[in-house]
Length: 184
Length: 184
DNA sequence: ACCTGTGAAAAAATTCACAGCG
DNA sequence: CGCTGTGAATTTTTTCACAGGT
Image (tube, rainbow over all chains, first blue to last red; front, side, top):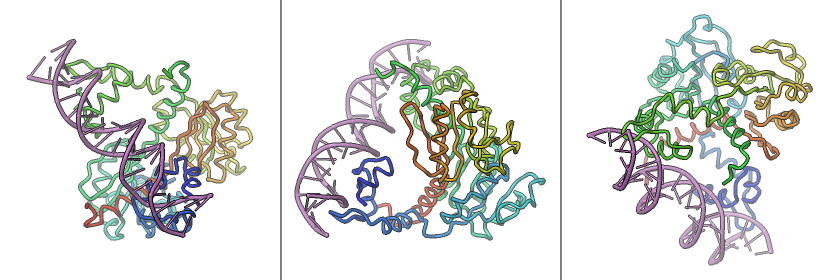
């Protein structure tokens, strides 16, 4: 498959595809293009997807429940090994392959299981505390669904997913698309 | 509040804050900074959040259910007025303020209700069809949680949220942070 | 004195375009 | 001939730094 084909699929330019791949190595063959299977394998390795990642979820509400059982996570090697909630009523409930545990057990559990990824699906008010617990539990990366910025020490990576902001972006796009003579 | 304060809160530089705001107008006062309430109102208006957006959700699985009842959506003026699923077993179930309806009723429902935003929370295999239905229903913007690219006509905006890719990004960040002499 | 708004400068990302290999 | 990999050119984004208003 050529960089043109890949670009088409990804909504990019072929030069973009080639430049980006060239950061990591020379994966193509001049005159032929890229071997899709090989490239797939190489990219999985670069992304660190050639291993299983042990994850814990904080927050067993609707979003936390959905994420815990999200099939795309498991299929990419992200295994949810524990779910935690501060609400005693949630604790003990079966969720995916595990049961919901009390938030107080998070640190010890994460350490024992050597979990390296934490997913925060709590209300904003609990996000900071959740992050602290995850960090004390020895987690290396946090995916934060709460609309809260997090301070983390060196060596811990954070990504924010703000679902409301995604809709706000759509709102802006729709509103802007409506403006008639705004192209000047 | 000064651009410095705003930058601190948002994890940006003050110049960034001022430049970005200056695209839309002069909202600050020299020597004083920005009035937070005024700025909030102006930005809400720019983003189109000074109105109620009627949304329909396609897919009443775990993710669709979580999104339908996601409090941050309602609080930003995004109201879920309908949820649709192709599985007859899901139909009729109460979800948030509405019941789950058969997918076949989507187009007519969206038109009647004048819904302008569609949220796709189906498996990848159903995403394309869902988008077509939404478009035929007169929707103006689509938030797509399925890992599928969508072709949409002029005038329809799309945003993709790929939860697995967020975790893959974390995986890469963690993996990369581990490499010892990779700073050269 | 403080802080915005903005040109100018610097840095980063993207595109161009082509030498060179298969 | 086709297509990669990559320097060079271009465009975009970010940062700098300061004139000017409060």
